[in-house]
Length: 182
Image 1 (cartoon, helix red, strand yellow):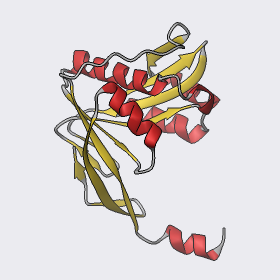
Image 2 (cartoon, one colour; image 1 turned 45 degrees about the vertical axis):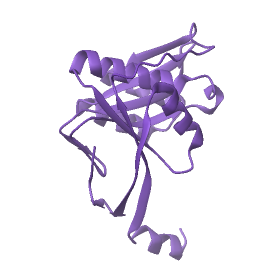
Image 3 (cartoon, helix red, strand yellow; image 1 turned 180 degrees about the vertical axis):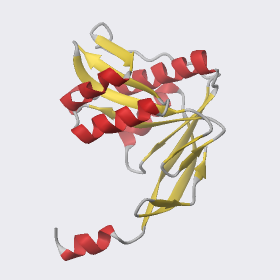
């Protein structure tokens, strides 16, 4: 690692993105040409290793941690092969820079590049929203994207999310300031 990378690692960084909001009253149908071959499942601890087919071991550990914290997580499979994942933090918890209070916070979404463009992302979001609405009686949801992630922003609109605001926080080592309440 170069000296500049080492120095940069220890400097504070300003992070930011766009926050989107969904009130469960919005009901949008999303379809996929893979729908007959697509299976979206709630993640249990014994399934976490499946994610290694498209991501690394650290992502497996992250899902094991999220499931143990009570987060609602989904994996998407196409023809039995891992295609994507998403997670949802329930109210009265903290995830990174986000204090989850007034809504559920969806995060850690990913679709493998060979399956992108098939509406798997909006279908995973819809599955999380329906599960949290039915099982947890949650009606409001938030999610973030980076400023330049246009495909994610389009996927959010397909599900019914609306732009709420831009957000910024400072990250320094494991310290994050100022917490964003969602």
